[in-house]
Structure formats: C-alpha cells, structure tokens
Length: 20
Image 1: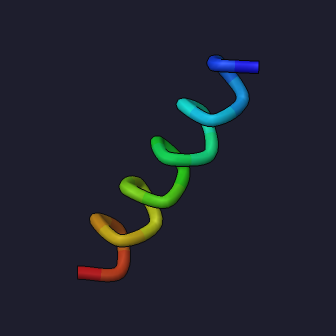
Image 2 (image 1 turned 135 degrees about the vertical axis):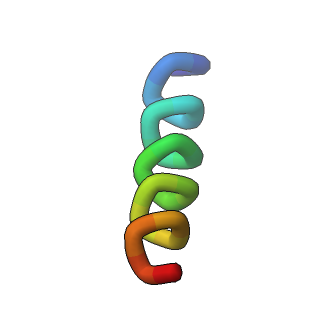
C-alpha cells in the first residue's frame, strides 16, 4: 500500500528529473 504510493511518487520524480 505505502510502497505503491512511494514507487509512484519516485517514478514521477525520476520522470521530471529526466525531462529537465
């Protein structure tokens, strides 16, 4: 449950970092 949310947030952060 908590890990799923964390993974989703981490993926978003990585995507934004890669976009920039």
